Length: 456
Image 1: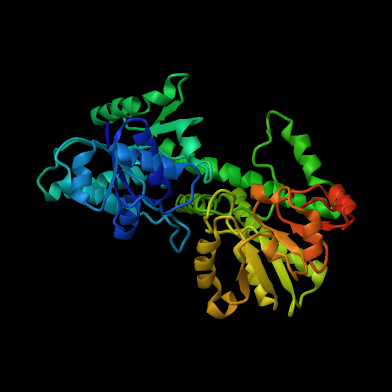
Image 2: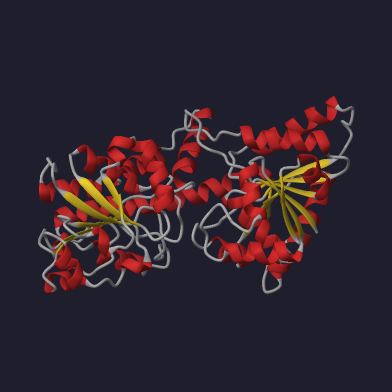
């Protein structure tokens, strides 16, 4: 099938590359000439395991092309996937300017039936706005009778595992309307996703608004589980319980399950924070209050301060002249994404209190330097040492603070850690290590919700 992907960001690039991998002829459009040049020269603008190889293989085969030519992109595919960004607006709602601009471009250039697929995460009712934008452009051209359909096909990709998630999905959600054009769109979408259904049916068909709602509901539920466990972990520290034992105890209940029950330093990234806010904003438009989600957001904002609090509790409020090592900057492992990353909150507090910081992340160093320059300014950024290896960050530091659970951090040389640190102190924001083992090694260990095992 001939497919156009509008937007070569995280969702668009993964979607385009994986659909090309399945044998489709994919045209990826972006207005950013530098990004298109990078892709056409063999690079990729994001870090995502396995993606570079898929892009290279399908570019070489001729099934995947990148361009800034809007007219050519509309002419190419009968399926037009909109996969542009929907950043949060000032009031927390999703900013749809890029989605609607893409729709208008399709309306200006289409010359026959098209299926416009909303792949971006968008609020309920966006398909109606996309359809209205298309109709307006078609009326301007005197083509108001030209048929099209708008369907919702939200993505459920985890950063760091996006290629695997796309190629082996646990579900594919597609929403379409009940018109003849909508049923024609269903037939085309069914054909597109047929390779995923050979073993069993993975597609969930529904109306458009329900499909749009499903994406937000899924992310809101996952964010809720994270904040719930973080709040319990903070209480566990006070009452003398081990949150890891609690996690196993409740996760064994099949009604609850084990996923997304890990206590930590708060969630970040491009999805959970903005999607929770956008769903709250949608509720307010209908005079509803999502009290649980307001609490989820408040708990997460507070949880991002937990590592700073633990540093202050151990070393005092004035950190002038002290140096700290930080492992992990990206909001999660296997990505360089720094959006809403807990490390940004921690670093700002340490520097504000007078400390200097040595940091290391396996892939996010360049992106972190760019983002932290905007957060802190050049003067404060100069107090951050971006080191070349994890052990380099430790030399002369008061303590090691772990923010991101990279696999490379799971089995370090603890004797070398002790030798390099001024004090054998680890403040672990992801509970990577077992407190009794740390005690046996002579390391003062501060986890999240595990004080019962350390006496802290």
